Image (cartoon, rainbow, N blue to C red; front, top):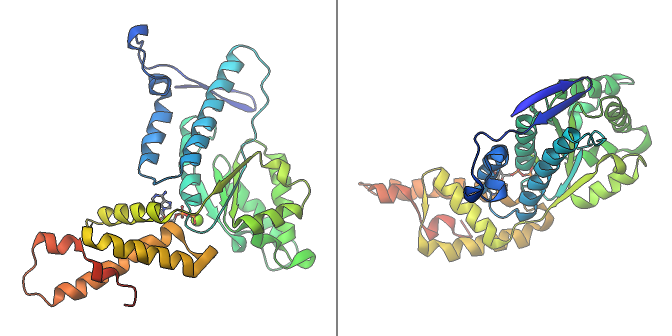
Length: 304
Ligand SMILES: Nc1ncnc2c1ncn2[C@@H]1O[C@H](COP(=O)(O)OP(=O)(O)O)[C@@H](O)[C@H]1O
Ligand SMILES: [Mg+2]
């Protein structure tokens, strides 16, 4: 892939690495010109579920690719706005997705640096008049050429008119105007709070052409995340433990409601189970490799 720079705009040229005969033409997305998409899709393979996100990523890629073709065909193309709103409960994969998208845009030269800055209210809001605008501008400056991800963005609206959070929102909007395609802003948060947040500044919603909702994982998906998380740490979940863990996951999900931290909660469960396994194994004098890897049902018991 080659990059052509023209004033004020970064262009991407997609070049197939090698010529393939028509007979051997692979499926479109397997075409060597699309190796960036291929790599990103491979990276997303380990993400359980998230079918909609995988479609969105492919659409973003295709749009960038076709935009380039349109430029080459001398069709007037407006700079694309790529700011996004991610809604969803905690642990549903919003940060993970934002990082993946940042790295894809970097490889497509849509973003110059493609770095990822995660921020929250305290990184934008200052303590005295004028401090907030400066802090927010500094943060945006750091994010130039990359992605600025603001988690729990609605917390900027906390405290109403007198709060400095409002100043942060206004400064952000201004920065988006002044540096239109130089950075990508992704705001994330609970669905209901985000909807309220967007009503506070009439210009806000239209600046985010891409909205994506991250649904809660099903118990089945959460179990798959648990298995994956265990394997990453070189543990195995005993097959007899599966119904116990499924029940525990369902119970936690029910008990905690919208506060249930989905993927994050599952990772914590595996860490806890590993600690319980250690206590259980300490009582033995010898430990086989299988013992050392195996997480049993009792390691996940509800009441312990
Ligand atoms: N689809 C998934 N597959 C595997 N792990 C996941 C998935 N979604 C989330 N996780 C894990 O859950 C944790 C929280 O994810 P994160 O992206 O930070 O969620 P959010 O930003 O929505 O709170 C991370 O450790 C992440 O790896
Ligand atoms: Mg997060």
